[in-house]
Length: 151
Image (tube, one colour):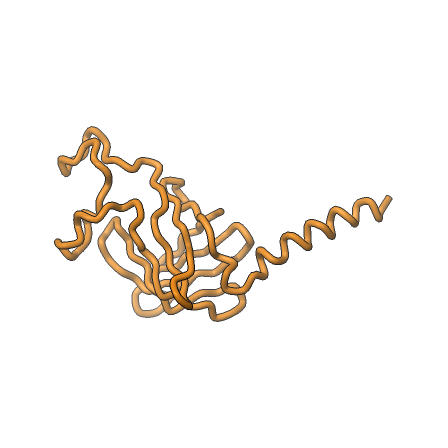
């Protein structure tokens, strides 16, 4: 009886371990932000890791948009650089330069927040196979905030 229970458990461990212990590539794929409004694709860019907005729950501005863009695709209108404000949000690369430093941690990158048009330093921690802690900060990690993304 115990051997029948042990075999499925071992099988699950064999398929789960490569995902969680995949080294730097453990974060690759689609991630959902906490509010569920956005899917972020993390991918390799050279020997670093980057991320882009793959999908928005509501890709167009609502009918009551105060910016006069009702029904049009959402753009990077909060960007501090006026020349970049017309970029579509879907497909926008917002993470770059992340380096795997070991123990399921990626550092030395930046993350862009389209809500305020600012860039922040970034640290990612894969705390479980389907849980990514995304920390954006200014200067040192202590001065920032963490968001939990899920697969």
